[in-house]
Image: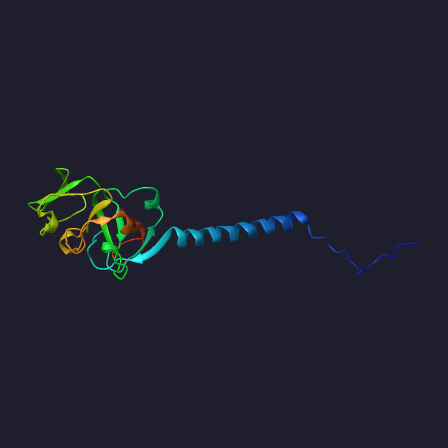
Amino acid sequence: MARRKGLSFYQKKKKLNIVVIREIMSWIFWIFASMLVAVVTMFCVGMKTSVIGSSMEPSLYNGQGIFLNRLIYKVSSPREGDVVVFLPNGNEKSHYYVKRVVGVPGDTLYIKNGILYVNDEVVDEYFNDEIAEPGLLADNVTLDDDEYFVIGDNCNNSEDSRSANVGTIKKEYIIGKAWFKMASGDSDIGFVE
């Protein structure tokens, strides 16, 4: 029988290529897996809060959003220079305080002539001004195990460990370490130093 020449309205159906389908499914799986890891990490490890007041200026500003690492202090301890978020005396009805750790367990601290001394060494890299009010550090304070001393970078406008109603901070009251700051006014987005 002779084959007909000319237009044909019957075309072969294209079969779906199994390799392409696997590749698409792989991409969908990895996108959803990445999103799940990001969400779990944010809710289990990370947390967002805002700075209240000007006690951390010029490092952090009033109302500036910061992200916390809540897991880091479950596997290690705060170090001098860390910016931490805590509840004063564990008071869950209080707002979060954001301050810098200047003393760790075993340290002896005092303020003399507006200068902070930790283990008889001057610590002034965090403050722009002399400290006008020594508070509890008018006398030597030696930190016990699991006690930390915190001061705001804007030391003359900060309610911190120098105040009797805040005092030393126990590790269990520390919520986490501030590690990333959002853009706010004069401050750029970036890591907390």
